[in-house]
Structures are given as C-alpha cells and as structure tokens.
Image 1 (tube, rainbow, N blue to C red):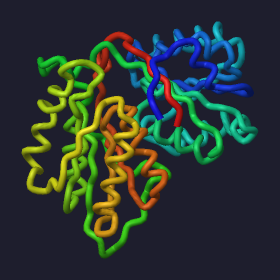
Image 2 (cartoon, one colour):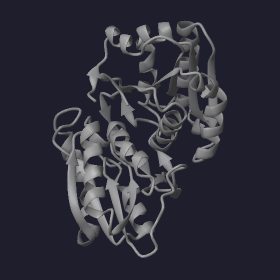
Image 3 (cartoon, helix red, strand yellow):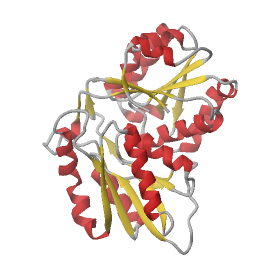
Image 4 (cartoon, one colour):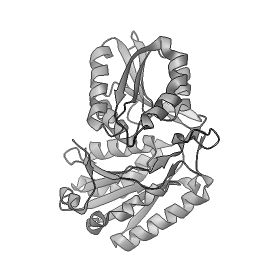
Length: 324
C-alpha cells in the first residue's frame, strides 16, 4: 500500500458500480478540499456528509458545512445526505451509517472517504463498519493535508489544537478481551496534543507504556521538532514506565501497522494491550488495521473539552489517495 498524490487519473482505481463519497464537515477549511476532486464527484452515486450536532456552536463550522453540502449537490447531481451526530456518541454514528450506506455496501458498492477532517474516533468507527459489512471491497481514502497546524505556532495562546478531556472511553467494536492475570501495557501514539495522552495515561494507570512518536519524515520540514517540544511533558512525567519508543513518518501507513505488529509480537503474550491513537490520520489507519486483526486489543479515545475552532489548521495543502 502506498500513498499517491491525487490527480484525475487516480479515479480509474475506483472502478465501476455504485460509489458513495463520505466526508466530514468542519471548522477547518480543508473539509472543502473534496470539492476539488471533480473526477471522483463525476462518478459518485451518493454523498454522505457527517457533522456534529449544532456544529459545536461554531459559526465557521456551520458556514463550511452549508458550503460543502450545497456545492456537493451541484457537483454530484444525486442525493447528498447529511448525518448529524451527537458529540462523543459512537453508537449513534453506526446507526446513521447503516441507514445511509447499508444497502449500497451489501450490494457490493464502493465507499470513498475523505478522512481529512473526520475526528479520529468517528473515522475508526466508519472504516471498521465498512470493512465488516463489505470485507471484499477496498476502501478508497482521500487525505488533504493543511498548509499549517496551529500547533506549529509557538505562542501558547494561539498554538494549540485541543484543551482538556471530557471523557476517556473504548471505541465501539474495540473493547478488547483482557486477561485477568496479565499486566497492562498502553501503546500511545503521540502527535501534537500531549494533554490528551497525559490524561489517558493518568486515568488508565498502565504498568508499562510504549510511545509511538513522530519521525523526521513529516508532511513538511521541521514539524518533527513540534512533536519533540510538545511531547516532552509526557516523556518526562512517565519516562520510568516507558518500555520502548518507536518513531513513524506522518504519511507512513505501513510503518504504523508494522510497529503495532512488533508491539504485539513483543508484548502480546504477557500484557493486555490498550491503544490510544493520537497520531496523524494515516498513522491511525495503519494502527487500526492491526487492531482489526487482533480484537483482543482495546482502543481508547480521549474526547477533548474544546478544539481550537479559530485556527486549528490553515489552508489546504497536498491531497493524497490510497486504498485499504
């Protein structure tokens, strides 16, 4: 599996038949990036736009959603359905997805997902739902990088992505099967939101920790330094519990999967493995593949109190395509 930079010819990989495009509106401008994929939209037979109920109170979120739905209706020329999901409730999303996509998937239809602004836990639920319902058909993935994340700004009042943690819970379908006589090991992907990782570690109190961090291969130069700067608190506070540190590139789906396989080989027999996925969307999907193959692993998500609605990210950068 490799990422390919998007171009019109890539649509040949989607194939014939029903093609459902699923995307998530957002306060981030890159949620509109899918509108530039005209070749894909020309063959789409359905579009589903997911959003948080009441748009999390963000005027920009509501405006971007209205623009995305309106322009998709103009481009696709078929039904564009909206799915409003209460914040933090994965079960509601599963019910809505089955209502909108179930018939197409059971008939062998394709799903193409723009993961760019999908919250991680919803992306995991969606991808796992599609894979379970239609395991023989590959899922097409679009990913639009931003030009810049707020976390790249050193000024603390501006340079943050999320603050606080509302709750920490297992993601539906990944509750794990824990052995009562095993110790606990938390494999935590670290990105640019250290507070979520810190709160997860404190709540779960694992016996040992594996850190999966960001290597030098990032979406642009020097972003690995942002990871080092923002992850310092986690390393300093819990260094005595850290068993091993792995580094993965921001676009490395296969590398992320391989790291999880290695963790399973080294620690699966002696530990109950819990995974907390805070890396890039591509890294999360790589780790998810391992978790789908090993349902004894529990996947937990820390839902933040607040996102940086004003400047979580800026602009729309490169767009990538791959299949899983």
